[in-house]
Length: 348
Image (tube, rainbow, N blue to C red):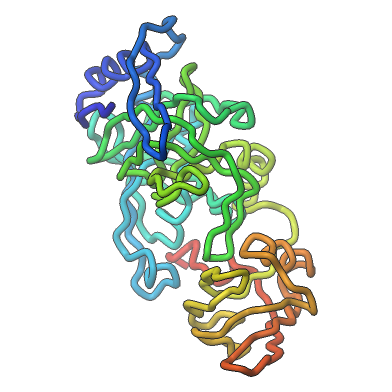
């Protein structure tokens, strides 16, 4: 069920109350997913107007010479969620990292400048603070660990794509990204929403459960069911104080190589090597197959990351074993701190 996007917050809030007021059954049979018969449910204690107004649109301009512009572009759009009374906004970090200009658009259509407060490459979260008189209701963080497969939640987007969709949690599992990223547990939902990056995932009490990150082809493990991946807010709470005080978590940075990887039959193919990265400096190149690390084999992408990060902090020499054609080649890579390669304050 899709609520038609509208710039008028009260209308969207009314539509959300309709969504929350019914139980939507998403039956999964024979590999297909269908919407079941809706039946009346107990009214949920949700302030729909507050939820709508807490979700903002985000636009960011990124310098063309920044590292991330090569893959993410220079003009980015997304959503964010206000999480305190001072205009602090939680979003997905790739929308705003390395941005030289950030603007947020409130539910009433007014736009305000915003500053990057923190970017956390471990969780993938970004924090902004809106300026120049911005005010909006804020959402409390839910216990995302309590979310279960089968739960029905609301996914809300802001900006030009403002709208709300009832979604079902169809997966709660590990996620390994090809860009040296790993979540021990992510939330996967169906049906897919297109305006997913930075979207709010909200429970029936109007609390924030997760932040939208990706459109995925396999939301339900083992089935070709498209959906979205959300980062649970439980990943934010342990490091929120560090992010607010220092702009990053206060623990040794993980070793970063600077590669884009693709997993095939337990081996890892190097798809891309980031310019000026540790991998490029070590001579790693696209087409290489990583088959071992420090004399150890690995079972897949997630296992490789855990073995990589288990070698020590950023700066550790990573002894990779690489297949080039029929030749097994040792490639030692002096790892680095990923954040130091990003222009998180492009004005400097």
